[in-house]
Structures are given as structure tokens and as C-alpha cells.
Length: 88
Image (cartoon, rainbow, N blue to C red; front, side, top):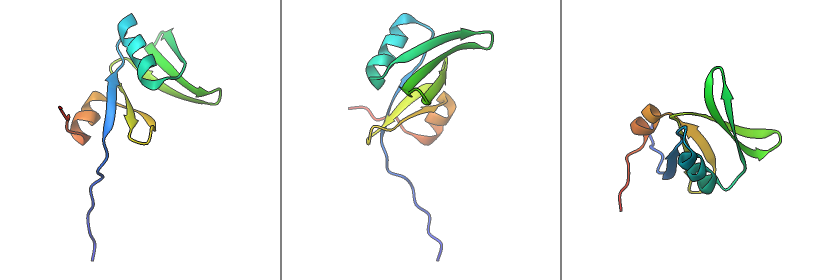
């Protein structure tokens, strides 16, 4: 019999915006060095895990952190579709 399962995970998320305060918020959230790049394609942030492992976040996207500390990137649309906001 085929069964369907739903993941029960919680993530914290912070949105990257092109402002000093937003950049500082992301730095505090991830606790890793970052590099903000201004390119012809737009602004993006590189979260540097190590020299060969970086996460690229574009303006408007969210940086997520799972309960186990795993970092990821998700669009606002996908965040709203996959997660319900939890308020305390």
C-alpha cells in the first residue's frame, strides 16, 4: 500500500533586501562571512561556508535555517507555499 507523508520541520527565515540593515540581519542570522556583489544582473549576497561552498542569495529571496542548522535559500512564493508562519 502506498502511503503519503508530510515533513514536519520548522525553519527560521530572513529576507535579503538591498539595504545595510538587511545585510547586517542576514550576517547575524547565519553567523558566517558574507560578500555582497553588485553585478549587471543585480545585487546578490554570497554566504561563505568555506572557500568551495557558498550560498548565493538574490534580493528578495529568503535565507532559511532548519532546526539542525542547515542553511538554504527559498523564494518568497515557495516559502509561502511550503510553510505556514508560526507566531508565538
